[in-house]
Length: 451
Image (tube, rainbow, N blue to C red):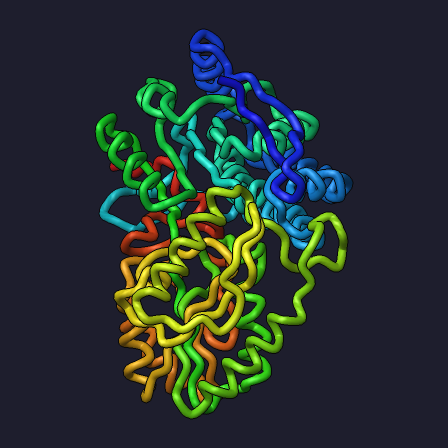
């Protein structure tokens, strides 16, 4: 069965993609292993030179790539442009730091010489999602390829056009054939790919269920895995917070990419003395957001990527209302579009609290103390990150050690940054991307000892 790329804004078909045959897949897997034999021996300076070329291509053609993102998954065009620019940033970051990250780590022992060297491991499979179709791939590929590995991309079927463009970028940048390959395959071929002798590890960004399935396969075949999964980030606002800053950040944290982000703020935990003011200002701000054609520069809220995703979100909202949540704004679906929605009186037992809501739905909870706020934030199976707003920063930092999340942001929304490690805990996955950690995820930290 062919894959169809459908524009979620108007339902038009953008393209059709034919899955590769079993023979073609085997050829690509073998080609990846063959390319690795030469690629691993290239100097770091050579690899970073090509990565710099990829960055320049991204900048030069960012409008073309942004339009492809917007048409395939509905992201507002200004945000799509920013996504491509961020891809160039992550490339530049590793251009500047790869050599330092990969240098030998000298450790003094009773040996005449002892150190750890960082060698590549081989072909790495990347299973990537549709919500940031360029960024998720480049934050994996920039460090992984520069470390000397080769990469195989299995992208989400609704963004195969983006996947094709990404492969073209690496080829135009001068990467040898086989170093980065795009695979147009069905999900049921994942096991064959992971099991293949050429594949040494797998990196997945996706849903909790997808992560469980891939982790099981990786364990079955003794392959390393990195999982960046869903999230239900808490956004805490304390009594001494700068309300204007908190409201503006909250709207951005929940509504960016029309709410389709694993690290979006989803559970808003507000101290009782500020609650009414904050909720009213939040709703007022959300009402000003412009809905419409995501290709127009002033559009801030576009469609969700697929109709089934909007339907799933609507079901979560309706279930929560039936369980006692109060609808303050929105709550209506129109094909792929879902209105920005605000719910209050939300409890930990409700769908919009305990599950990941992938769309523009904000769940509000009122609390009476700082301790109650952080305790409520912890009542989640997810652990990507939390935000807390306060002017008493030192007091709040005392709570960081007790937070089980992988990120703790004060007076800012949770976001990924090439300079900082990124990942999750609990059902949000394991392993780290970006920074030095992301480069060392797929290397062999080899101990060398000379007596």
